[in-house]
Length: 251
Image 1 (cartoon, one colour):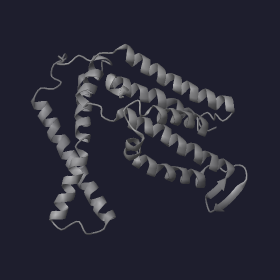
Image 2 (image 1 turned 30 degrees about the horizontal axis):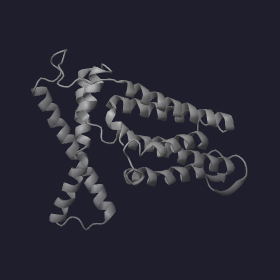
Image 3 (image 1 turned 90 degrees about the vertical axis):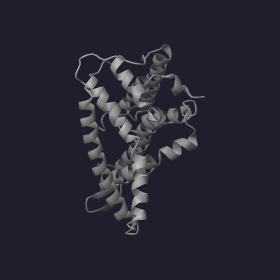
């Protein structure tokens, strides 16, 4: 079952905002934990199995303990102190903040992986223009950017094969990664400049109105999905308030 295939791409973007924004109002593990639990339970319904979700979320999973460790060492010291060294203080409050930050990173990151994966840039552009009525120049730029992002992985693999063929792949992983990242940045800038020139030469943005080959429709299932996301956010915040763990903006 893949519920996301029936939704408008705009619905998926708005759903991410509805789910993620309330989590930014409080730094507590309860509200983020409730939202994370709903995300994990509903991921198979959205067509993303738990194994697939784990593979796609690998960068988030790697960043989560780093964020928690920094908060545990340098968070506001309150309560019993367990360890201190120079500016680092591990206390009850810093540990609770570290747990809340780690859970919140997952609660914000995993829904993004679930909702944004597989969005067709053209359908997204149709929705931005026809439903949200955004300026055409912005929409065309957003669609072009989405297309370019999808090419980053193939560009990285092509650069790796090219460096290996030239004998430049034996300087260590860190040095190779830094060199390839810089090369990828240069390639992206050059491609962006060429794309902008080509779009200007073809008259994009010259006329105030545009026609659309495919209509972008907003149906009842889109409203129902947004309502479900709003209920999840309200439930997460309500549970945090009821348990007394809600901390407005980390206060």
